[in-house]
Length: 165
Image (tube, rainbow, N blue to C red; front, side, top):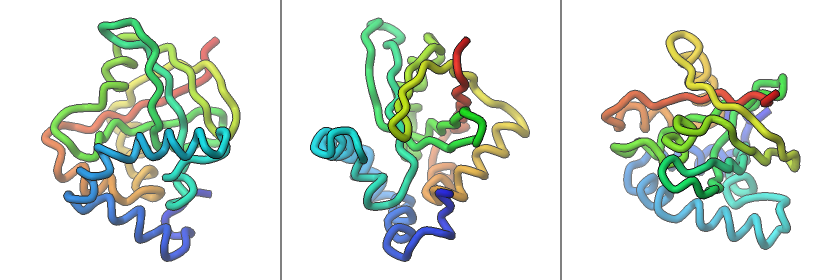
């Protein structure tokens, strides 16, 4: 559904541009702010990333690992087709994982808003073949993850989000 190969030329170009280091650094510093603004302007219907690049954007609400304060961040989500989502903590290939990753490690219970549906989820870090499978599936949606993997001096975490019981 969100396959890079099925996206139009403009959306494919935008998705690919994020792999270029200068643009990925720019996106890392600005895109979450632009997404939040567009989300607010459209009354929760879309984000800039979803509208322009056709990417599956979810709003991930975590509880701060140190502060205990709730934080909400836009993240790319890979729909699994059975209610689960997978998110990749690439942080644009930067040196450190995104803060939401550390929050999920400390407090795996989270809330996610995706496709207009908000639900409680439980996070689990994937490993081995399962991690590799979902990372490759993510590349099918967003090829920027290829460059992030090359650039990051760490193994990029892959997180499964499933309904909490």
